[in-house]
Length: 108
Image 1 (cartoon, rainbow, N blue to C red):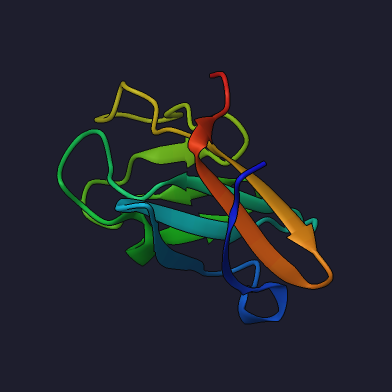
Image 2: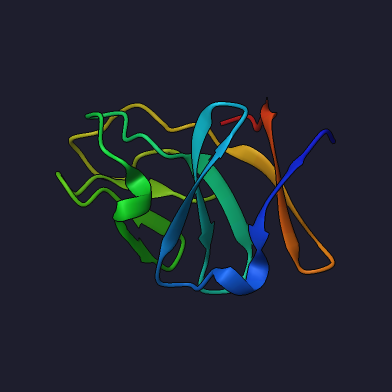
């Protein structure tokens, strides 16, 4: 995995998302309620809105503007108005640091 270190896992909490940019790609880094770390495309597919400014609840990330909720593991929208998924990227936590490979999109 040709990954980039984006932050320390200690900078994340289950209630917020953190925006990072890897190889020019804006990514929302999210820790779910179980402590797993996820990396999703930061732009809502309904509008040009940063998802990292939204709301994290359990295993979803909600766009603050129009309320679309995206599943953290698949990027699939669970509520309208979004109907297209956001990309999900490979993420690893190694020795307390979070690494993301923006070139490795996971299958939806």
